[in-house]
Length: 514
Image 1 (tube, rainbow, N blue to C red):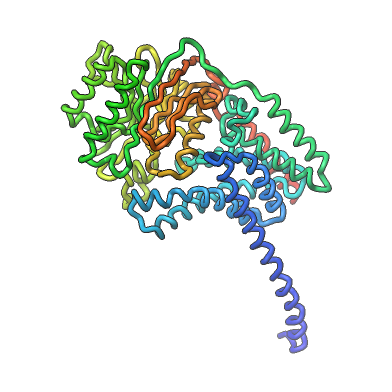
Image 2 (image 1 turned 30 degrees about the vertical axis):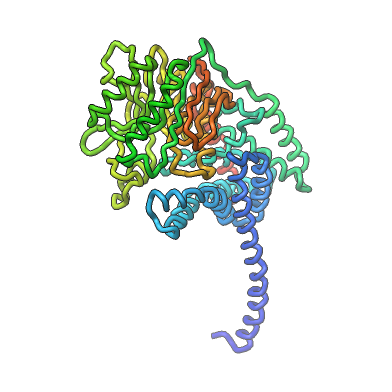
């Protein structure tokens, strides 16, 4: 039983601790707020703002905060700023087309940001756990960046939107993407940020300088990107600019079809192929023989093959979204159309995950989509076209698989009218540019409202049209049969190197505590 005097002494000794905790808690809140602001700066590094330089101060400031402790909180705040604020455009999409109240739409954006923020939290925790305040951060921070980016592209079906490596487009270092892919080249901005932080510190300036030199050498020694080979071909990419609220409207169907036909007629004589965007024909031609004959006659008149986005019934109440090929000079009947389906579907937009069956899809009156199991490639007049349907252009492995299956050029058809005039369409376009570099292929991108463009194998935009206008883009492209190192090896060398680095570091840190 404690005495009265002892109790009084304990009270006096505890009171200073309580006062001391107040500034500590205030510091933690300030650090979390600063991390949130660093993360909120990240979206401005990507299209359409294209302020890539912002990545370096944002990552450097965040890394300094990580090294002050509480990495999970700091990492989560950074991720919430990057993916929560960065995905604000989801709110008007969910409100307008998902018919959600603004409050519910805003909550969904916050929820997406919170889920995605778990990965930067892991990045921060790995950095603190394996490097702490030591110079090892020069190795650990970039390695953890690669691990985080790869996981973001795969976990929860993957969402590598605004992938960190995309900021290297339009820089001399972009050639490394043809070797290590978008996840691997995340190393360079992370390495630069870690080196800059060490350079600004008093204890590790020489190591920081060595890191800056290393980053500079990586830029200077970057390999040249691939180029096309062989004969030059001409494609006509049709951008019909169909409003999203009219796309599935039966009363607007005739206008939709006539608009595509009119735009195609104006360019057919000068093109080797015509390409229409995703779900350009917004119904099942299998159920509409009249419209099917109408399309056959138009293609016969143009005498130019057509690739068009459409829907295919697969039975049992399911359908597939994909790319159809129609050639008026083919020996087979025009009713026998080659088809490459979409493999990577959009959760909640094209299918309902099995673990939440009570939710419905955003696309009205369309059956649940089924992922395709074909090779993703269609053949037309001796040319193999690899199909990337909308969302698939975010994923390096999808483009890589098309090339491994023989694609000589990639065709990205999409409908970004969902996003209005928000930055989302430009960020989506930026991802398509990265797929060109990784695979060493031209990307022919036909979008309903834009961004419609032809992308060279080095990621440069060869031709582009303004968005939200009715137009057809004529441009040239070349084929390629070569495989980049990334196509040959994929992500495996990168993942093996990460494991060889991180596992010994974990063992070393564990043994230091024993």
